[in-house]
Amino acid sequence: MKENPADKLIRDRLEPGHISVEGFLGTDKRPIADIIAADTGAVEAEGLTVELLGDFLENLHQIADAGWEGRVPAYEGNVTVRADETLGQIPCPFACGSSCHKAEVVVKDPDGNDLLRFSPLDAHLISEHGFFEGNGSPHRIEPKQLIELYRHCVG
Ligand SMILES: [Zn+2]
Image (cartoon, rainbow, N blue to C red; front, side):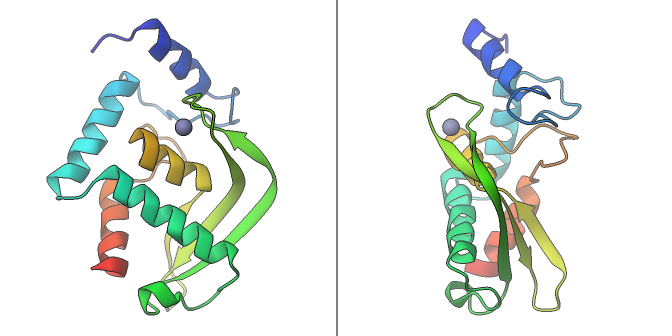
C-alpha cells in the first residue's frame, strides 16, 4: 500500500524524537496502514476486536489508578496491576486530538511475574487506531500476548 501525504505526516510523528524519544516504529519499515492491517487481522482471526482489547487495557489502567493495588476485583484475583504515573500528558501521534497521561501500568500474575507493561497511550492507540506499534519498538505490544492476557482475565 502506498502512503499518502496524511500518512507521511503520521509516520513523521511516529518517528523517534517527535512525540516520544524512542518513537513508535522500531525497525519496522512497512507502511503504517500495513502494520495496522496485519495486527488487526491477527486479532480478528481470534474472534476479537482491537476496540475490545484496547478497552480492556484502559480498564486495567483505571483499576490501577483507583489504587486497588494487589487483587483486581474485576478479574477475580487473576492479575495485579500497579500504575506509575509521571507528570504530564502525551498527545496521540495520529493527531486525533486525544492525549493521555504519561504512565506505566504493570500487570503481574499472583506470583509477581510480569505479564504486561503498557501505557495509557497504548490502550488508546490499540482501541482507536488498531496500532500496537512497529516491530522492534521497545513498547510494542504483541497482539498474541495481549489476547492471552485478555483470555486469562476475562475468559
Ligand atoms: Zn488517537
